[in-house]
Length: 111
Length: 113
Image 1 (cartoon, each protein chain N blue to C red):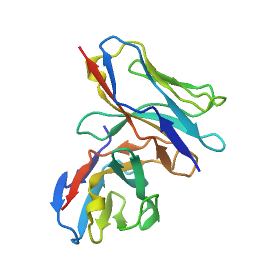
Image 2 (cartoon, helix red, strand yellow):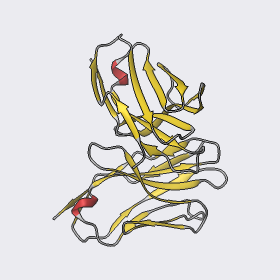
Image 3 (tube, each protein chain N blue to C red):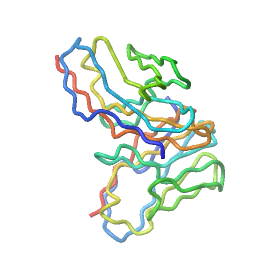
Image 4 (tube, rainbow over the protein chains, first blue to last red):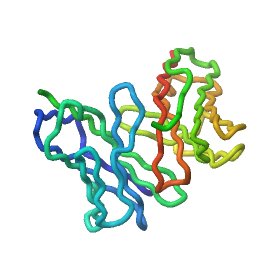
């Protein structure tokens, strides 16, 4: 069945460091891929998405490219800020089907 | 922000008691979902609804029931709460099924003693 695997956390970075959070997926066909972010005490918010192979989703300095050949959707940001501290979830969905979420990666950015 | 509220936001209850959580939306979205969030598991789908009175089971539906009598309200009931149902519960909505952004409520933190 469909599934998402993302890198274990927690991840701790210094401000202005480069961020990569790895996400790989298992799915038949052509799912859509998403990154959601959860700030402390809040629900999940969509960060970015990509609906077909080679699409790049981007938002707030974060980027992720849909790589069908490697079944990956890694999240990157060139220079993280303290305000980026949160839990990040990778997810996939198929038409007419449910979302599948990864287990989440906690990011802490220290000044 | 999408207009989604959940009530209560926090609840403590005892094993064996029934519990109902409410999700209310003001977006008129057709699809509504209940998830639970647990450490090491991410979010797992409990039940979802694709219209008034139309619901279906998700991955972890045992011990839960749902009802949707109005477009804006989706209720999750724990028929007889157990300690394994201690979790954070999130409601989500979307305009169409899958491949469409889901918008999440703020969550309900439930502790079953």
